[in-house]
Amino acid sequence: MTATPVLVLLDHAADGTLRPPVRELLTLARTLADGAPVEGVWAGTLDTAAALPVLGAQGVTTVHRLVTDADLHLSAVVADGVVQVLGATGATLLLAVSSFENKETLARVAVRTGAGVVTDADGVTVEDGRVVTHKTVLAGTWTTRCAVTAPVALVTVKANSVAAEDVAAPLQPAIAEHAVDVSEASRRVRLVERIERADSGRPDLGSAHVVVVGGRGTEGDFTPVEELADVLGGAVGATRVATDEGWIGHDAQIGQTGVTISPRLYIGAGVSGAVHHRGGMQASGTIVAVNSDPDAPIFEIADFGVVGDLFTVLPQAAAELRRLQG
Ligand SMILES: Cc1cc2nc3c(=O)[nH]c(=O)nc-3n(C[C@H](O)[C@H](O)[C@H](O)COP(=O)(O)OP(=O)(O)OC[C@H]3O[C@@H](n4cnc5c(N)ncnc54)[C@H](O)[C@@H]3O)c2cc1C
Image (cartoon, rainbow, N blue to C red):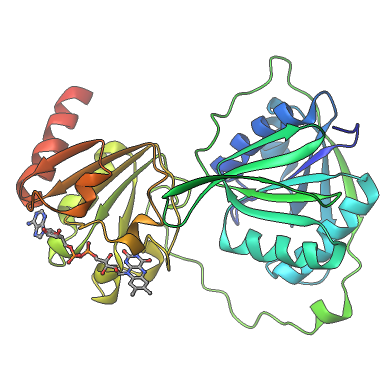
């Protein structure tokens, strides 16, 4: 690669805490940088005391902070800032966590700059100077490699694709402020309301290491699903049937028309494994299925299967895990 920095979009919660997959991306960025600096792009208020030690431990040399009176919750405004940082640094590769917001932001940046954008990669390498991404497509049935041919590559990477590792000698990142030149088009959008989602105390569905999913088989009672998720420190997900029935919010839906997840461990309970659902979870590390029907399609892709009633199996599993945890 060139000596220009590899940039990472630094997703953070409203309180300024970095979202866990960002550390994974910074680790990945170091492997791709080949000695060039790894730098971050931060949109919004930066709590230097909290964020810089984490970023320094990941070998980040510079944090590019976007400063504007416009609303940085709007992807159009963040895109304006990212375009500016790309120009200022000459970076040819920017990584971001796969999220709806980041995909929208990077699509806008790509339109503005002519960069090549790949979403939902689960691996990124540099081969002969080209950024090559790896991703599963068509409901997880194909694994593809995709080389970016444009001079600048923008890639969203799925959580849990890389194990985060700190550097041996932490750095003190510098801060570079960029007053965002907000475009006329971005000014035409105004955020009129934001509702903070109530904190469930569970990890974010899109980046959790463990996800326990309930389907129609729960018949609306997610208690055993939640109990097992909590014992494992995991997130709770659902099929579209469960969300359409109103048993759980739509933001818990996993699949083609919901969230795409790739946790290290997926446990599906009362989930048949329909193709639309598989499209959002088939890239999971280990797939466990609990279903009373031995012919349920989910067993075709499961690493471990339990034929049984979820209302018996899940509480037993939770109790045994609690016993093992002491
Ligand atoms: C355009 C389109 C987009 C879609 N997008 C999505 C999407 O994003 N995500 C998604 O999930 N779906 C999506 N769907 C719907 C999808 O096709 C399936 O209908 C849905 O995934 C099935 O959900 P399910 O597995 O909960 O229900 P079912 O398919 O009805 O399966 C329920 C399973 O529970 C088992 N079961 C019943 N009782 C028990 C018990 N007590 N213990 C253990 N097992 C039990 C049954 O044996 C069965 O296998 C989409 C459909 C369309 C047409």
